[in-house]
Image (cartoon, rainbow, N blue to C red; front, side, top):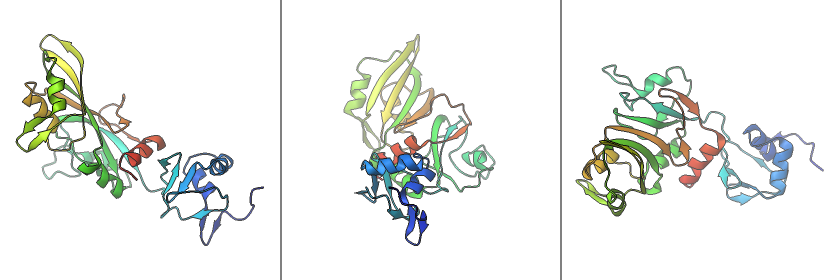
Length: 250
């Protein structure tokens, strides 16, 4: 029988109420998840219905995916248009990412950068820990790009890129390379890489004889740009945020 005691007490808020508020499930279903051992708090499987937690401090996972408990934590995807700077303010009034955030109440910052001539997926968040890990090279979060390049593309280009290319600041390898389509004199290729060095995709492709004419970042980890139109923003869903936490071990 479920307890009818108050959900909120001096030691925190009942776990099932926290899960319901976070949008995981109704309280009844949240209780079932707890019974089944599918909920972890601070690394420990919780099966007791009366457990109280502090949502501001506890780390909760459901089925191995971290749950965002704080109401004020926001992570967005901006489809950054070409010509927009990856900065919150530009003294010469050139278009920048900050222009798209003028009406938002949260103090958001961009996770890494895309150069002005590159468009596509740029993460914006006020979760400092998540942003730091996503940008840190040791976590190796993959980034996917589509590039238009001069064609044709030789069959050995992918093999060369996967084996490693020596650039002026050290060797670089790609996680994968794929020819998506080709037409006379041009080709569309996909590059997946976990490096974050400046202009790395452009430099890599130029090094193998295919200077980039148009570049779009289409994914970071499992978060996809999809059909989102240039200049638009959207809030990541729970599964997408959870995938980012998982990718950086949070």
